[in-house]
Length: 101
Image (tube, rainbow, N blue to C red):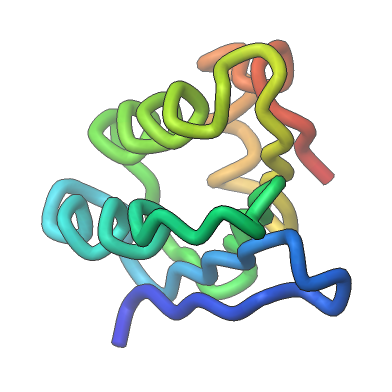
C-alpha cells in the first residue's frame, strides 16, 4: 500500500507515510488519508522516508493539504526526505510553506 496513516504518540497529529512514487496516481489515496474529518487532529507529519519520486502533482497535493489544515496556521511537517526529494522541495521554495526536517 503506497500510503499509510497512523496517529503520532500525541494523539493529535496524523502521520501520513508515502511509499514509492508520490505522483498523480496517489492523488485520491492521499486525499482520503487526511480528509476523514477527525476533530482531534491538529497537525500532520508527511513521512517521505520511503518516497522514491515526487512530481509537480505531489507538490500540488501538499498545497491542498496545507489549505485543508488551515493555510498559514496549519501545522504540517515534511520529514525524512531523500536528497532528490529534498532538492525538489527546495527548488519549489516549499521550505517557506512547510517545516522540512
